[in-house]
Structures are given as C-alpha cells and as structure tokens.
Image (cartoon, rainbow, N blue to C red; front, side):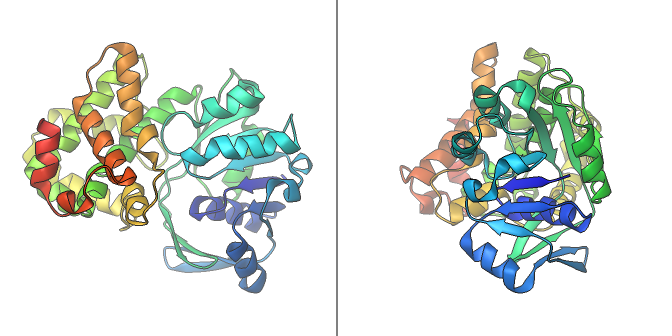
Length: 344
C-alpha cells in the first residue's frame, strides 16, 4: 500500500515508520529538520528498549511535493487544530484524493475532512499507543495499545486494506461499525489528568495523589458519560484499554480504592510523559486541543441540554492560560486556584 502521512510528528513518524518497515512505500510530509535528519541517519523507532532504524522513507515538506494522487491512503496525523489547513492544502492539489485516515485526539476532525471531500472518503481512526519524540528522527513508544478504525459513511470507504497494512506493520487493529463510540471512548481516556495537569504543571500521578483533584477528574468524566448517554453513544473497548470496564469500576467502587489504581495506570498508560495539553501549554502554543477534548464535551452537552460545569471550567482555564488572559503563575503548582475556579 502506498501511504502518504501528512503531519509527521511523533504519531506520524511512528505510523509511517512502521508501515515502511513492513515494505509499504511511505512518504512523510514534515518539517525541514525532520527531512534532513532522516536523510542523514534514518528514522529510529525505539519500542520497549528495542531500536529499529527505517531508511526507506521519502520525506517532503509540502503536500504538493508529495504528489498525493500517487498514494492509496492519506493519513492525517497533525494535531486536531491543524486538520482544516491540511485539508485545504490537499484540496488545492487534489480535489478527489484517495481515502483519508484521521488519527487525531478528540472530536471533530472527521467532520472537517468530510465537509470537504465527503464522508465516503473518510476513515476515522484512533491511536492508543503512547509515543513521544526523543530526539531528531528518533521516537520512543511501547508495545501497549493499537489503532481503531471505523468508516464514516456506512461501509465506505472500506477500511480493510488499511487495517491489513497496519496489522502487518505490527499494530493491534480493532474495527468498529461507527466512529462516534470509538472517538468518544478515546476522549474519555484523553481527558483523564490532561487539563488539570496542564493548568497545574503537575504530572498525572501527582494530580491523582490529591483526593480533591481526583474528584474533579471523576466529575469531568461523569459529565462526559452523561453527554454520551444523551446522544446515544456507547462506550467501547479500545486496543489495550477496556474502557467500559474502567468506567464501570470508577462509578461503582469507592474512590479510596480507585484513586491509587488510577494513579499508577494513568502514569503507565502515558509512558511516563506529561500529557499533551501540558506539553503544548509549556511550549507557549496558543492553539491547543482543549477545544476538541473538554470543549467538545461542553459543546455536545449544550446540544443535548446536559450541564457540564466542570469540563467548561477546565476548558476555559486552559484557553485563558494559552491566550494570556489568565496569569500562568497563579495556577502553576496551586491546586487551590484550580479548585476555586472549578467550584465557582
């Protein structure tokens, strides 16, 4: 399968690199520094301490240079806030591209792609494998997790070829009849310890060590679950993550029992790295994925008439910090400021 990966950061490098190792012709669209680094040394993927170097990769810095019409599948791996620009760039070069697979966190990327190319062109995807950039053309990951796939319009496009290629590349692949349950189940995982970590600049383990902050996390999850129920969206198992079982345990077991378990599991599930919102906020980025995570819960709750005050407060704080409307020093390492804002 000839694959074009647009937005070759950590996720794009992992997916594209593994597909290339499985003898698929792969083109990455990434930054100039990535092109130079891969040209010099190849792409190194470290999985659980085992390193593999990929050299059979073509790297370009723009979609037009990649000739998207020469590929069987386009995989979008940029952050959610970059999808609209990527779609516009692809459309300028190729009005009717091959199937597009979206691997963004949160809710809404598929809708953006479908609005331009039609739902029959979109495969919704979700990646549950932790991955991080460890250096130029070097990424680190673990064996846990995999990729979920779901067509956006009935059975079109058929995800079979993409599923087979990804499975042959070493990913655990799960297929779903519809995208909503898959994407919202991943959102539940994404919002755990994410916004709070960004606001306080604390790792999730420290967040979960505080019973008051743990209560904020559970309340945000409970709101998201009520929104899902109001929209008739089920919770489904994802590769490596039994999400329905996890949600049931969090609802039924005492918090004194689940808190230490979640403290360990959340830190382990993210591979020891800080959550994405925290990394982006610390890097000074004004565009963050909060709008498609906690913000998506708020928006969907408003549509269904479900109150989401905790998610709204978390989203507004993160948005305010990113835009400079709120004082970063006021919230950094200060759970009292966070709790006061949420309770207000």
